Length: 107
Image (cartoon, rainbow, N blue to C red; front, side, top):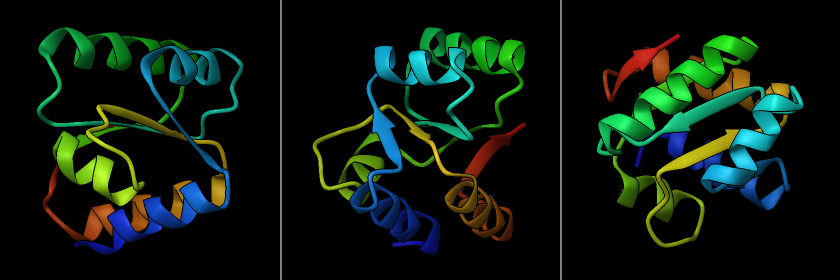
């Protein structure tokens, strides 16, 4: 498992990560989301919804990994969308992701 996914697990245990469409959208709208990650195998509609919402509220967005790997990294079943609410974790994960090619879209 990549370091970025390990960091997601740490953020979860620290209480700095939320999952689920509605909760992530709420975090984006309130500017509490510092980084949003959408699974690469999410539906095109889901990817577009979060791409548009993140662009509107100027929240960094990553699309990559698959729902199983995202879920297992945070100790839950499949996860399609995650939001980090801590800038330190967001920066750490962004730095790791840039080193790998497992993410297809970073904005």
